[in-house]
Length: 511
Image (cartoon, rainbow, N blue to C red):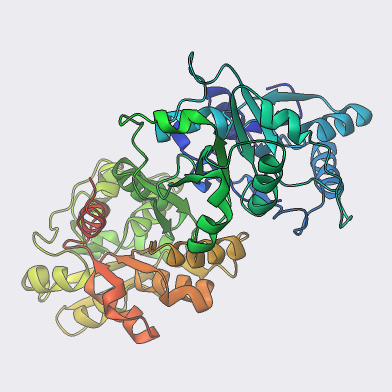
């Protein structure tokens, strides 16, 4: 990857159509400038710290002009970033790649073009309509149906030879065809094309919600008038090959399921690894930041371990920061050889095993603080207990233990701070609104009460428009207290990532 800028075709939509070269470029990107019609599942190949900027344009207007996009590419490259300019379809088909290449060459910036699959070449597989046929179509003409003006101009010239196109002995494939359908269909008819010529309009080719409308060329405008929800992006296939549609087509991908995993980075990847095999697109967006607390309290707790009967770990973070400090002080797992260990759940016990330890007590049924207190508390009566956790997350255990043990020492080994903002929060909110219009949901995970509160604040007005996947009934109660409808919450049967995966699989009928 020696070039600074990669001009990459992302294909028409289905991530399965992404080339290996495109995937490799995305995986090593530091900045991605992507079109508005890119399937966002493809962006998940990018590193977590990659900056993602949508430079989508709608029609001839939109927020970004081509010179502005060129400036952004050049600036990022000059700043030493590895830039991927991610385009829908193929880089050579109505993608304005030539303009970007011209600017890069003028600036002396190294670049590489990674072609993609354009919609015209994918449409046959996903609709069964052949573009060529030895008896009916000896060629294909690809053209832009929408007149292309220059950035900042309101008018465009029509340079197409409609009479030549009407005589063309093959298939016409028109991009950007929906807004000007009434105009171009009439121009073809006026130029001699038969009104009965079959037309197939394909919306969102290769996406889960792909739609196809068929009609004669003469009734194209009326067909669209009767189907107002049939909106861009659409390509149109004009010619007798439309009648040759086969019954066997490439299956469309299943409906998209997106989950925003709000756990801190170290936990988020583990939950993502559970969700992705189910076909869930995972966006890792931590809502809390975790850091080690001041070490004085931790050091005192370690020094006093010989005076402790039980040590209770309330989370895997507690294990991590307590044991790391123990090793920093020159100790190791033998320091806990005379102490019994209780953990709130399997994930915490798993974290202990990484340090050569096993829990003496883990709840067998439902997991979490309440379950631990219910099952283990008789073992703790009259004992000296050290509770390891955080001030924000161990209140249930602290309250439950204080009246039943001989001595309770609590040490906060880490701190939690709510993330103030997600860099792409506006894109996330737009995604939630867009999916809702399609009758789909974006899921948000919450593996603790603090994460639920933080994510709720970050999402703002869209917080009640998502579906929540939570690890326990207590977290669900917190969301309800914030104003979430109970029917928008799915609770895992057990306090584990695997159970959360099972819960979303059942709810979405996947896996």
